[in-house]
Structure formats: C-alpha cells, structure tokens
Amino acid sequence: MKAAPRKSLGIELMRAEAEKPARRRRLSTTQKLALQEALAGRLQLYPRGYAASKTGPFHSRRAILGLVRAGLMSLSATARYAAVTRRARDMYAAPTTGESE
Image 1: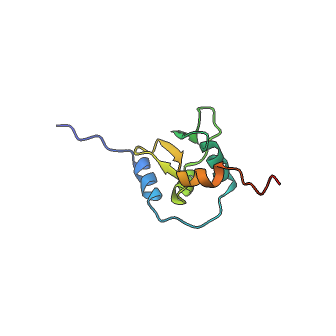
Image 2 (image 1 turned 30 degrees about the vertical axis):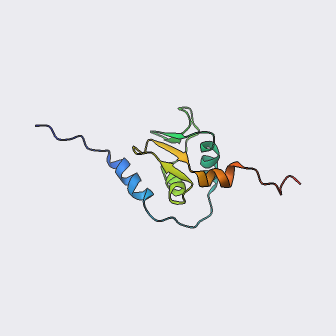
Image 3 (image 1 turned 60 degrees about the horizontal axis):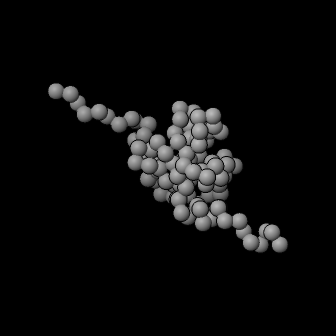
C-alpha cells in the first residue's frame, strides 16, 4: 500500500504565512517592483523566486508574501502563481489625475 503524496513543506509554510493577518506597513522598493511587474500578468514561482519569465527579474518569496498579507496579491491553490488583486489594480494601475496637471 502506497502513502498519499505529501505536499511540499515549502508550499505549506508559504500558505501559513499568507494566512497571517495583514500588517499596515509601507511597501518596500522590492515589493513595489514586484507589484508593478505583476500588474502586467501573474508571476510564476521559479527556484530563484517569483518572476514573469525564466530570465527574471526575480522577486523573493518574502516580498510576495508581504504583498499577500497586505491584500495586494493572491497566491493560487498550489502557490505556484501569484496574481495582483482587484484592490491592487484599483490602487496602482490607474494613474493619478492630480500629478499630470
């Protein structure tokens, strides 16, 4: 009799981190860069971190989890993909009208 395949411990830890309550902090520069890149599409998990393609730039799991806790990104069921939430799109995708004048 075979045992059921076990999920990766790393994914379980990431999911546990993502479920922690949101913290009210400013976004770091790395988080801002990750968020801007993710606005164009979802980020995929590679061994070096999250990125839109194999060539990078790569964003650390820690930066992505901070965005998840802030409610600006969501992780897929397998934690392989990270996507920007509607809240983040509303906040960061639309240019502000006051700056151009």
